Image (cartoon, rainbow, N blue to C red; front, side, top):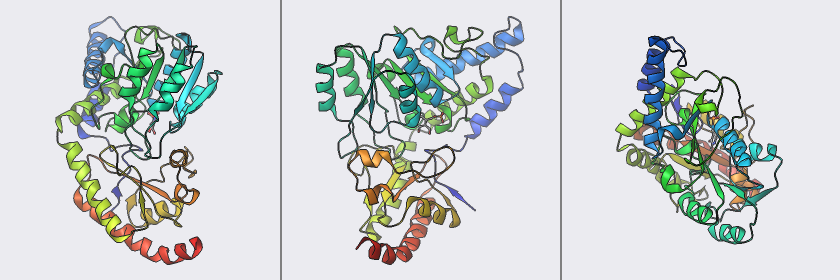
Amino acid sequence: VSVYLDHNASAPVRPEAIEAVAAALRMSANPSSVHGAGRAVRALVERSRTTIARSICARAEDLIFTSGGTEANNLAIHAAVALGARRIVVSAIEHDAVRAAAAASGLPIDVWPVATDGRADLEWLSADLAKSPETTLYALMSANNETGIIQPYAEAGALISDAGHLLHIDAVQMTGKVAFDFAGSLATFAALSAHKAGGPQGVGALAVACDAQVGAVITGGGQEKGRRGGTENVAGIAGFAAAIEAAASDQDAAARIAAIRGHAEAMITANASDVTLWGAGVDRLPGTLCLSAPGWSSEIQVIAMDLAGFAVSAGAACSSGKVRKSIVLEAMGAAAQDAASVLRVSFGWTNTTDDAEAFANAWLNDYARVRPRAAAVNA
Ligand SMILES: Cc1ncc(COP(=O)(O)O)c(C=O)c1O
């Protein structure tokens, strides 16, 4: 039996979300239709919008449903250009969805460095704001997908909005995991994704501050107030809202999951002193454990753990599943051998302390076999 420890890639769908998806599929009408059946589906979409918006302190009318986090990030950058952005500053640890969308905009791009603790450098930001005459979009994620490190996005938002510039927060990894206050962040945009929260894949949302005019990337029938064409993914949206509700009602989840993660970390660090734990000293997503085991490549660790019955990740993988060098750890100043030997274990709502213990035992067992060889190579 395989133990699933890859919640940051995609969380198992919550039963409440499965129910909500099935119920929505049974409704079968177009939410734009004027008849009663259509109005019932519209009401479901709007109830879901309110639930999700409330969970991040946004107004329902400021939430645009999309096909997921990637589309929401693209829509934010497209909208920022329309709002007059003439330059984009992306943090050094952004997800490809933000980096690629920024590159596609054709605007000049600058990179916002992170300190060695993995948090975006606010002094660098202040200096950049002071010499930034043109409207600039700053892109900073709320929490990193590889390390789980929580970014100083609210402090950044205050500085950026004071200076009259724009902030986009990729809040995909926080969706349904820890509280995210969109209004309080003073950001212009924030991207969410349902499948990181135990909702279905292929649905997400972009929150926009109420004064932001958004032009569609996907044009069509004028849905989402002309901001995203196409009949809404009603079942996905209903499942997204149900997942958010279920996550919100599981109030001690963050503490429980952090304790599970802590158990695995304590076992590993007590028995493998040469391991580096990333983000150990700063605020992190409760379930993310990111480590480097020098000499044991990410790819081989993932395969070894898969054989042992644990689904984990190398942190940096592209859609083909090929493992890449971690740009996140490089940005934190990690040595090349640490960036090449990173493993990401992400616990979530399905996991127990037994899962953490079984994983740590299996990992330590394999590492004890690999370590003598790794030490010889590193010497
Ligand atoms: C930080 C971050 N942004 C964006 C995405 C993309 O979201 P989606 O899979 O919903 O397109 C992911 C998912 O891997 C992510 O971790």
